[in-house]
Image (cartoon, rainbow, N blue to C red):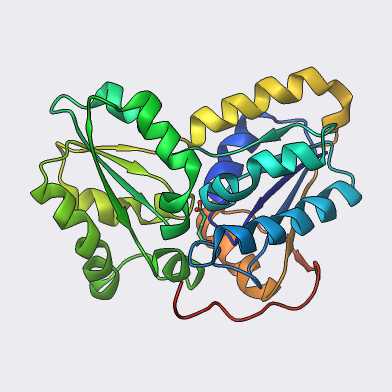
Length: 269
Ligand code: DGL
């Protein structure tokens, strides 16, 4: 079985292409909604939390894990691999490489969480793949929470998205990276504001292909019965309604507890 997780339902943007590509595999998705959003917490807190989430998925039978969250990948991918050397992990990395290759004006905008921008992973991706490109980073507090609440369009969402996309256009970017797995659900609004000439890059399909490559090396360990289970910390019914709305899957979401109850998100990072 393949475990997939995110701070909430954002990782569904990755789970959808994974499910399309890996028809046979058994999938267990955990929406860690009771503890999310991750992006406004410290990298250390996210790392500690994600360790518990991975242990939960492994105890439930996961033989590989997809970290369908840029923030969790940035905070914890290296430590997860060190703690669980027998379990392959596939994570997210801001898609700066394809964006830099696509940008004609050599000006790329990246939308992600504050925690992702503070990570070494982001710095190293920019250094490795975009040293000759202007990279304009915009942290988007509140976007993941809006998606979790099912607020995907309308004047308020338009204003929230415009606050970060319009400054990127002022910098004359021609390519925008969606560096958080929640943001593809805001892509119609982003596209409307950015206009038809700006390319929007979402790494989900490329990550799904990587998942398929790793899974094929594991053979029967990833399962054969096409089951999809979804678990949530926090409001499981709310997750089920969003899963239906965003993917069309009608699935009963299991409510689970992972680790100790959550502490509040600190107001000052
Ligand atoms: N979906 C997560 C990501 O890709 C983060 C959203 C959050 O929890 O802040 O970064």
